[in-house]
Image (cartoon, rainbow, N blue to C red; front, side, top):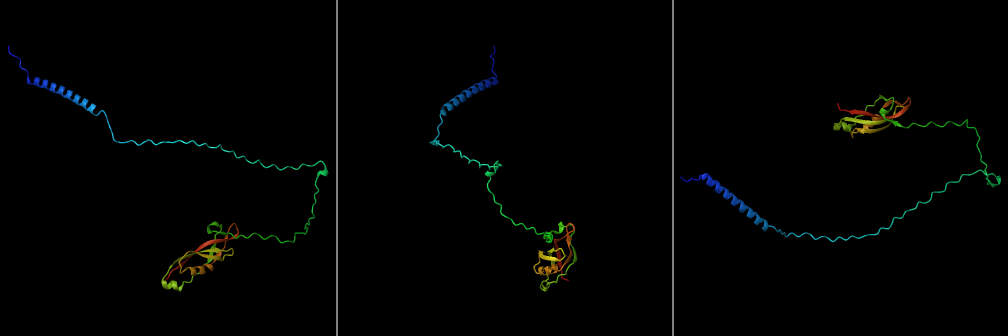
Length: 209
């Protein structure tokens, strides 16, 4: 009989199995050796020392209650006495009473209304009747200065200007605008059918030809 020959593939499979088992055994042995080699761990880092904590006890005195003063006594109510002898003697001084007639005395003067209203707060606004033309200052004319000066005027109950102040200024033209504003005439303003003082702004244009 002829002997059976093993195939090369069977030999390779057998060798692979043996190599795999040997490799696993060696790996397991190395793991055990490494585990026991690094079993202890030492470090050179020093931990800080724990501080000594001392607890002191303080005895707090009890809080004293401040007593409020007693309320003042209520005033006594006088009671009518049954006996006239218990009453004190009261003397009433003689008082001179002026019984002169007051029919001829003049009536008290009516209170003056000095309040100055704003232009928008009156029921009937003032009307400009005469606007004075300002005189162009010669110095401003030579300097070629032009512009608009606004003057705030206080119009009295008679329609004349009582006070004038600069609202928008051009320094070389302000005085001429104030002089012209003081000469302006208005129909006075009314508040509830009564003439009142009122403030108003007047613009003055200065323009060279």
